[in-house]
Length: 377
Ligand SMILES: NC(=O)c1ccc[n+]([C@@H]2O[C@H](COP(=O)([O-])OP(=O)(O)OC[C@H]3O[C@@H](n4cnc5c(N)ncnc54)[C@H](OP(=O)(O)O)[C@@H]3O)[C@@H](O)[C@H]2O)c1
Image 1 (cartoon, rainbow, N blue to C red):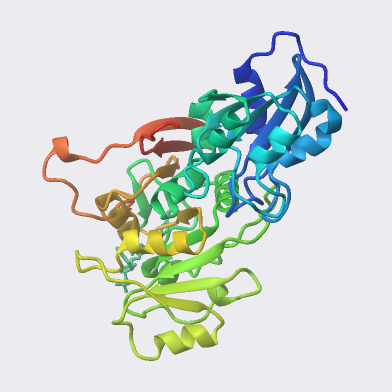
Image 2 (image 1 turned 120 degrees about the vertical axis):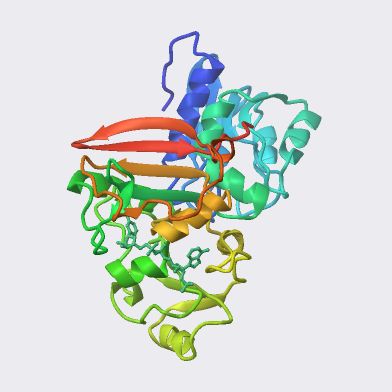
């Protein structure tokens, strides 16, 4: 059904609508990108769609199906460059051309080596007017994990920390459950639902025996995120909720130096085990290699949930792309465990910096998001 719009709807407003549509696929489209498409004729939307899951119609094809014959002469607003390679529903650039679309407005070029400008080339060669960059900042932000994955081959790294006012994540006796309030922890479940993997260090597994499940989120992710344990020495016992494969699959990343027997025990408990190089610092695993391995497993976004040493090592290696801190109104003092356990720079001028992204109050806690400044486009 055609949706009547005000006569002067701008390109950026229609792109904002396409980005909102794309977001509906965030938890089901990966490892494909979540993409939205709006088709208009004379300011009236004649069709729209989003990519819901791998193997199903891409956003452009979904929108073309919704529009039918009304797509002739239309403008297409797509959040990502239309693909030019063959998949189950054929190249989207060809589908747009065949349907008679005359103008394509796109937010960002697709860095996937199979596309990267080829979709635009195909459209231009067919005489379609192509505009690139409308809504690029919003689309880049929405698609950040996908863009990062296709550009670097590594999973996008989101680190989440629940801490006190004085930046502590556990008391002197190791207790950390719970620093933040119920509503805040539910907010963290929404973050888990957006990731394809949840990663923790061996110290956290031994201290907390977490389940790392995703609970009470809407919509639920198409697949429960992979639970990943970083354990170079083989200290984590193969038991507890993390090894309950009914909750979600488990991957233990270890080194060649793991205690004999540990690998067999993890595998017998149903976990997958892979070996990763150790860090040049001498402590634990090479975290860039961890992110590359997860990227090779089609994890677009990996959510790190501690603890102090793993998060410290991520910061030291400059690997954090998005940091979410939940700050509770309590203090634990210098005997408490710092959120980032690392030596830090010798002088302020060398302090790593992230960009403040947003601040939200959740009941009595605060959620503060920081991001690595990203290249738009
Ligand atoms: N409030 C929160 O948000 C929060 C979240 C999580 C945890 N916690 C608390 O944090 C504490 C655990 O933190 P933690 O610092 O002791 O342990 P951790 O960071 O969870 O784990 C550290 C261990 O991970 C392994 N590891 C693998 N690769 C590593 C690398 N590149 N860098 C550093 N470690 C690596 C190392 O053991 P191997 O050498 O044996 O591999 C290391 O000893 C617990 O008290 C827990 O309750 C709090």
